[in-house]
Image (cartoon, rainbow, N blue to C red):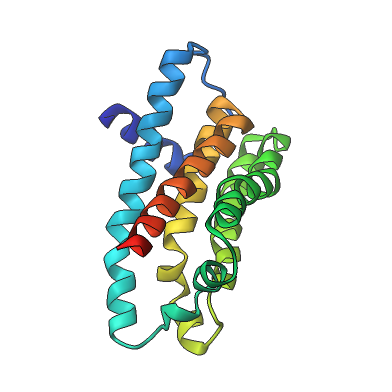
Amino acid sequence: MKNTFLELLKYLKNPVLEKDENTNLNYRIQKFIHLLIICILTSSLLTPLFFIVENLGWIDMEQHAMENILKSYSKPIIFLLVTVIAPLFEELLFRAPLTLFQNAKSFKIAFYIFTVIFGLIHITNYHITSNVLLLAPILIAPQTILGGYLGFIRVRFGLRWSILLHACYNAFFMFITFAGQSI
């Protein structure tokens, strides 16, 4: 996993449009699992920032879009929306176009732009206030970083893999959310 993490960091510093030539399924599944763990750990490490921001009264997480969704829809519908519809739509919108940028410089710029826009679009999950806008870099950090990770697997393995990684990442956190509601 350490090698995957180092490869990922190197890639994020200098993204290039280069497929991973190793098409062995076991290799790809192992790399995928490593990336999923890295995604979950990264998000989990950022979670305390959200508790701090909320406990200081700067953000009301009860107004987060996910809270409204949890109150408005059944668990199967939410699970479908979060683990199938959103990853499919978002990957088609933010990762599919990456391979259109064949020039190294334009690819790098596009990679970073799509990654940042992916993060920024998630600010709409919050009730927009001046505090939300000021804290936006913190509030969208998990999605922005995830966007980089998803861009990496999309370029290296293909679009299906980024959709699958996005879906598994979302599914993990939905299971945690649903388990928390049962307690």
